[in-house]
Image 1 (spheres, rainbow, N blue to C red):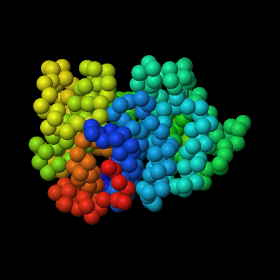
Image 2: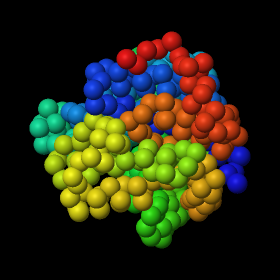
Image 3: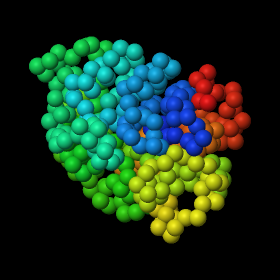
Length: 352
């Protein structure tokens, strides 16, 4: 059983889909947030990517403003804003403004990933940066210790989190901030020992802060649920193919239907990459996913699951979200019911 005290969140990357205008991905993100609120999710995260053909989410603060206007309760977060791309004052101003539209609901997750390609890095004017120094400057604007007074004054605190790998965990521990971890650190489909040791090191080194008195870990990975294992495996194909295509062609594409991907002749290397992507996710029936998530949450001591799954079929993704909510005691008991309820639960925000 999944610990009832674990928070449940979605991370939506505004994935584009073949045959759709890219703006539809953003409208789809807002619509998904509305449904997540109705399903009882605790938080809705959005990401930052630049110049990536398969992702429309380039400006988290702008997208979160749209989500804030369409929701009333669910917390809203960035997972994350890539601090090397921005001046800390500008990030502070953007998220202070967001709190005016959604008081008490805004979370600022911060990362340090570089641009996807060299041209993107040049366009971002990206050079050498000191993540810890930028983080300290950013926090100074929020706590009033910086030499520039933040305007507007935030309507309540803006909690910070760090999207963490090895060095990110050390910075988060030093600053007394929560972490969001994923990928190899979770050891899904591989050896969990290095990730567990890294998390243990974060907890040992953690210094309490005004925001956070104790270490806090959220885990993020793709989670997809369907009524049968075969159906769930089909849901995983579009994202797995996008990752394989990116690794063999250098371009991260829009999501395509699973049937179209099955018809493509794939190399042995591409099939290997697809298998690796699926192995790093948790995919299956509700019972199988519940068992695997319960083990992972227990092993990592995580306080929050940030589910990041995506697939081409929007209705199937909606059904998967509903089934995941049910596993956490939130809502619909099966994906079949979720699919039948799609029309009655669809928000007024159009995707197409």
